[in-house]
Image 1 (cartoon, rainbow, N blue to C red):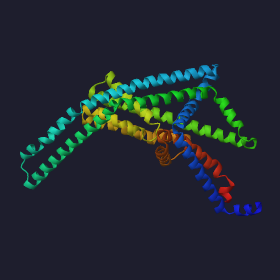
Image 2 (image 1 turned 90 degrees about the vertical axis):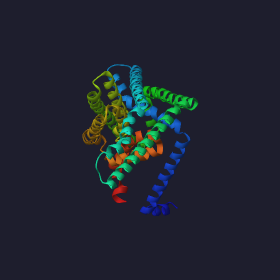
Image 3 (image 1 turned 135 degrees about the vertical axis):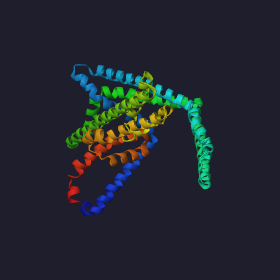
Image 4 (image 1 turned 30 degrees about the vertical axis):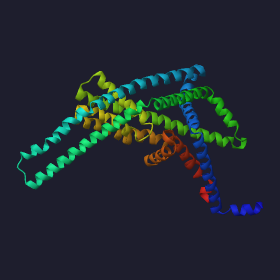
Length: 379
């Protein structure tokens, strides 16, 4: 029986079929587990990611003769301070956007009045009758289109704001989110304090013959994750700073350099920093409120804000990314975007955030192990 199995196993298509079947079965099992315990898994994953990211900071404090417990306290105090600053900046941004939405009808009124008077202005110009009729019809159609767009936009914004009136659903969502965040932070405190012990315990569960390979894989994974996280934080900070400086100049030119101007610009820069952790789309998402806040300043301000955001996007794609991210993890942008889209579709925002480091680890497995394996070289 064993000899027959060995003879069958020598066929490449048999081994490939078994590997594919095992992989599909593992993916199905993971999907079933994730679907049933999604909230708990996401909470634990957030706690582990936060502990892993902040662990080097705690080790840095330990090298300077602080206890690990005190280092954990300092890290979480800094994180709470960061949350407080983020709340202030985002609250200011929401306030500015609310004021813009309240003034939206007044902003659109001059444009609608201009289109309403367009047929009369054209009537004073000697034009051939067919051209005049075509222009009148185009002006009427465009006016109707703008009015419909304004009404649709206002209805959509009113519906969005009305969701806040659903107090029970809104309160439940907020409480659930806060509870999940507090749970993740509580778990991360214990993980961060006992992370060396946790790693040692997990390592000892591996059979001894495989421990050297496991240690090597863990070190490579740690290096890949660390490079990705450090690179992503650096790129996000540079993009946020670029957006903040660019919008400060644009807003300052058109509405004066004041505390409100810098507050708006740096709030939007912080927003770009946050969204940039979902790579390649952070500037695009943060550009929407930046353009909206520039509308009351005039079309030149809109063009200036668009130019500042375009500059930040170009710097990210041609300077920050190539010199930082590609050097850190050597992942092609197309591969990174594809992984983010697939992971985001399957697992939401958490999947999109974790797609990069997981892809970096799989690339290490591919380049350092698969390409050097006997299966790849001999079949």
